[in-house]
Length: 297
Image (cartoon, rainbow, N blue to C red; front, side, top):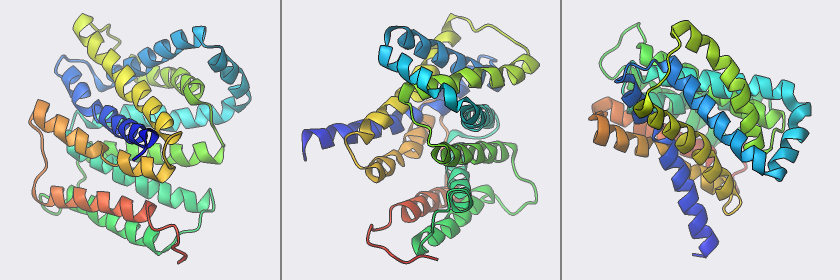
């Protein structure tokens, strides 16, 4: 294996590892009576401030910021879906349910949303593997939701995680539709408008200032999953094929489960575990079929 390939694998796994820290860091802040709205707002604000500091000293990034001005209407839409909806509802979901459940429901609902919207908005043709994957996804999601018995009520945590997943799936499709590309400069814009969006629920929940201990956790959220996860992903894409990077980053729920078990004592069992396995299998089948597969529907 070449050195570039090894580095690419490390970076892709690093992105999954960093993104897997969101759950336990958020729950740790909840224990300090920091609301989900405050966690979401401060995470975005600190990421924006950090990127702004980089922007001041990076001329290339400054040029990209100027270039992206013409895409502001599209960025505003994508920021609402990928920052406000994802951050606010994912963080809120951790208040009501375990980290593994939230991560898998978010992952599954995002995949279903991407499947549907990419068909109608991006006009992508689907093959047999895509449809098999969609069916398995729905089965996996149902197993996780109804693992404790059939009920007409959906738990609050699952509902919030599903909304976050729909927002993220929509964000991915529209970002591709609008051809948005700008590295950290694009993320700077996303955070800028994200701060504006997230201020409203933050204000409504009661504005508070974090103390020094909480600040460190919030800074970790801003740097590790928000900036670090994105950087590792984009860097890995320069060294590996995109499908290889995405496959490696499917390990994110596994890292999230590990952190949740180690630090919070949370885990999934029984039908929840089976459902989680089916969801991962479904996404793999749907997205990573052999390149020579020509069966379309």
